[in-house]
Image (cartoon, rainbow, N blue to C red):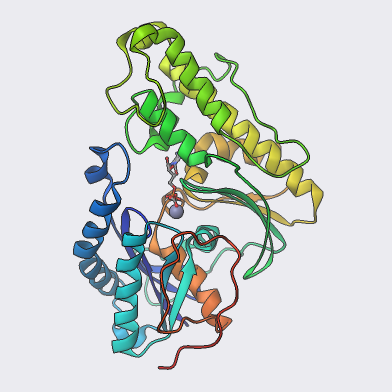
Length: 372
Ligand code: KG4
Ligand code: ZN
């Protein structure tokens, strides 16, 4: 059995996990900063990195204790190297380097987007039940088409085997999660935006408003800025002189009362969600039909959206998998899983490993293993 300690600090969750053989979670501890950033209506980078500094050591210690593991049980340390907020990433990477150096363990730098993909491999260890390791459900089967939908990315990726990715298409403007967050702010639904829009939408009629869908024909690319602007225009039309001028500036409390009286916010949320889901599902269906794939996997925070999960399963015609709800958003278990497969490939970091805030999905293989 190979045990990996995963560390994730790319955005606003300080998370550590111990995962066996890339799949079985022995422990996962996450300190969320959601309540702190709620006051700003989004993640405040400076505050985020300082919170990571305070939380990282207790979170790692708790992960070890919950797994009843000691440093000698751990085979390697995997840490998110990018993409993400530079100050936040630095806390995780430097902590991981310190541990790897002092415990003399290999260090693996993980791509956060790749980690989201590996959330689909994760299985929780039953709470009680003796020493016997549980029977794992079958792992995803390659070749895979993965739809990554997070706060910063929206991409369709063909994965022929572990570590071998081909980017088929991506958003040319906003990410799907970003559109959810901006519309949530505009409609005063609160933070974080995605779950709030989903909750409001559950009481609304998705056919109430005819919102635009950008099909980006002949490509596997996406665009969500037109849809987001259409929601803004609707609000402006009803708000008159009090209208917010842009989605970026609008904050909680910005929605003019007249809009709430004249527009049904649940209907608008449901129509917006339906438009996002429609595009994501149809474009994934076309991409899955364009090349041989055995499974379609969803990954990233927006994969937690139940309307998206349902529509994917119903409309795709290919087996669809999505991670358990709690592993869709940022967590260290998915980092440990991705790190395990990288560890097996000897794709290890060197001591000069730096954070890569703008890291894309495809990167060069590392030169060689770390000397320990
Ligand atoms: O993957 P993630 O935790 O962080 C990034 O790597 O970006 O994704 C966060 C994004 C946010 O934009 C959030 O609003 C969105 O995922 N999200 C959702 C839902 N839960 C989280 N979007 C739609 N429906 C949800 N239930
Ligand atoms: Zn993420």
